[in-house]
Image 1: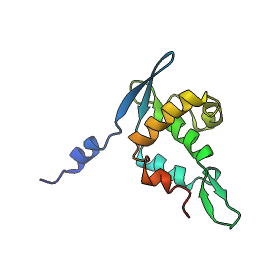
Image 2: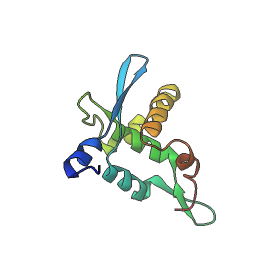
Image 3: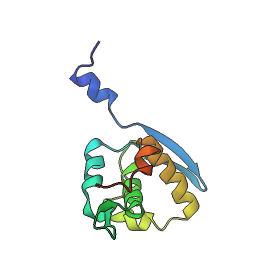
Length: 120
């Protein structure tokens, strides 16, 4: 049986997972589709190669993803978009743990990330 509008909206709510790091727990949430699309369209997350083609700049994209994914227990963001550069200053160990979970939880691990340098 096909899902109705309300059932689909309920089933499609972002899921969360808790990541344990040194010092405590961090809640990572799936991002909403509108956040996902705006991240791919954001020119600050892109770079232009020597050949003139635009690609996703993962050094900018990943912190931008994290500020959207790190939430409190209720799913509310604890960072603003402007906090991306601060999040990029986390230790590499903590950043990698959080980034790996955010990419995995949002379906961006594997081919999508591997092809992130592909032409836009």
